[in-house]
Image (cartoon, rainbow, N blue to C red):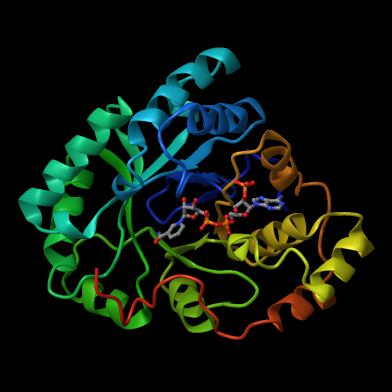
Amino acid sequence: MNTSLQNTTTLHNGVKMPWLGLGVFKVEEGPELVNAVKFAIKHGYRSIDTAAIYENEAGVGQAIREGIKEAGISREDLFITSKVWNSDLGYESTIAAYETSLNKLGLDYLDLYLIHWPVENKYKEAWRALETLYKEGKVKAIGVSNFQVHHLQDLMNDAKVKPMVNQVEYHPRLTQKEVQAFCKNNDIQLEAWSPLMQGQLINHPILMEIAKKYNKTVPQIIIRWDIQNGVITIPKSTKEHRIIENSSVFDFNLLEEDMERINGLNQDHRVGPDPDNFDF
Ligand code: NDP
């Protein structure tokens, strides 16, 4: 199916989004960040995931400008995602937050803008703002993050535009069966954050056994499992060799029996906050 790092899936509005991108959570402004994004672009990544709260949009923007020049590609070849933070959820404040993110990134549009967390009584107004930005052609696609099924249902009751993407914590210990089924049935593309469970699955014996069988590494097995499950994935690394490693997943296929073994590792275990019980 996916034979190249630049292969895309088509969102329900027709926009194409790469299956694999680079995450930059917890990477502070500075040379490490700029280099990570530039390594990614140099090695064929076309999708970068940031957020206002990561406070690194300026560095991501600098790396994009330098990276595309060195790679001989254009801005339009990239897929850039950012997210509105909780304190900016509201109609006017979300529109303003979008402009601030664009300015920091030095871009004139984003490919995808997400509501970062489903803050009660706030996400619907923010969604109206995203709809306005989308209808005015200021952003190519809009979506949400950390939305459970009930949040999606509630949002869609009033929404004029259905979210194109839902980005949630997703890895072999948290397979999100209900959210995944709901998104699939509603043509909302699921996207995995912390796909590597922040590095905590590296020594898992079953994953190591499967990795050995395919002559791959555990991160490569997990990333391949995401894609074969139809889930977009954005592993984070600042190290060039790992950025390359994490993208070398388009030259093999996991057999159904191994997909099932990995699916079977689910424990509904989160490493991040619970979207039904958070206080920020
Ligand atoms: P990941 O699951 O991507 O794991 C990242 C960790 O794994 C880092 O410590 C990294 O270290 C290490 N790592 C990466 N590749 C390898 C490798 N090949 N071998 C060994 N270790 C490796 O965690 P994140 O939490 O960063 O999630 C990914 C992205 O998802 C974020 O960067 C962010 O963009 C997004 N996200 C979104 C959230 C949301 O609420 N919407 C919440 C959290 C994340 P090193 O850098 O040293 O290589």
